[in-house]
Amino acid sequence: MRGFEDKAPIRLHLSVLSKRANCILGLYKAILSSILITVKAHHITVRVGKLPCGTWYFEIPFYSSSQDNNNVVWNLEGSTIQVKRSHYPPQTHFVLSADGNAVALFGKLLRHLTSSHSIQNCFECKFYAIPDGVISQLESNYIYDKIDIGNDRLEGVTPEDLRFLLEHLRAKVLRLNVECLPISIYKYEKHGDKDSLIQKLIIGSYSWVNFAELPSIRVISIWREGLHQMNTILKSWIAGKNRQMEIGDFELGKYSERNREIIFTGVESDTTSLTTAERNAFLSSESHFPNIKALRDIVALDITREEDWLRATVIEATTGPSSQPTQKMFVMVWSDANLRTIGRIVD
Image 1: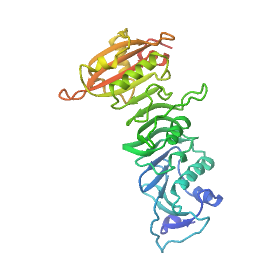
Image 2: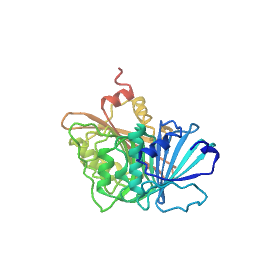
Image 3: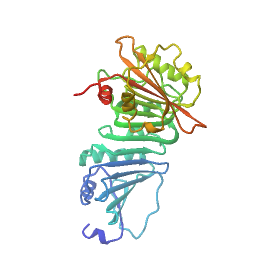
Image 4: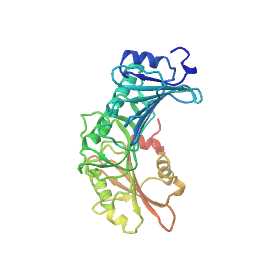
């Protein structure tokens, strides 16, 4: 391999789990501080390291690519890897082929990187498609900064996929814009007193959501759910369910003066005791919230949980152009963390 950088690309046949493969990867220097996973309809890519430092870039196509007969060929354990080296940017590009079993090879690659290179953090994992079985191949030992599934709504997520994502992966942000097939309502199972592994859940399509028993996650954001679902969330929280939710961010669609009546049907509320400054501090606290300057017609009401008299403030606001205003609703539970955010608790 000496002088590799000056020669034509070399095609290697090897197993990503073999000792020989580990030695080959060790020849290429990369700062293993981050990993970025992208899943598309035709291939999966895994980038290890950050530019401008040296990086590894793994590409796993779902279909076999043509081979260059001018390349040197190695045969080892049935998997194909084409290795290319570039200086600008400084990157080693590995193209892996597994003869139709790309999803399994993807899982092997992640386990190899974890066991051999002690990679524990994934900067982002983004899905533009959901090949069968790919979600369960994600490495559960990673801490993901963000798992983003579905720019456009994706079909093909199974109940088992949802359970794996919500109950077995650790992520700061999980964004789901998916349809669950077969159609079913996901039932969250809390494992004893363990804290949720997901810090923030953002839901696009919500046909699988049980609004009376939301996943046990501190920050929950849902796009365009109906007014009756919002009423269910508030009633369930008052009754002692949805108790792990401390921050809610809900888009209700087109504004109507009747919306509040529908949302608060059967819900007792009082004028909030938050000051305007405290309310604005909360509305500025989450990066995914709209800019507070874009919110108008703000109304805040307090509700109370029956079993322990814990308060929550429900904030209504409109945003968007005045010709087509959109209604937003925020929920701030009076937890210690939120009271610190608005300045009522000072450590």
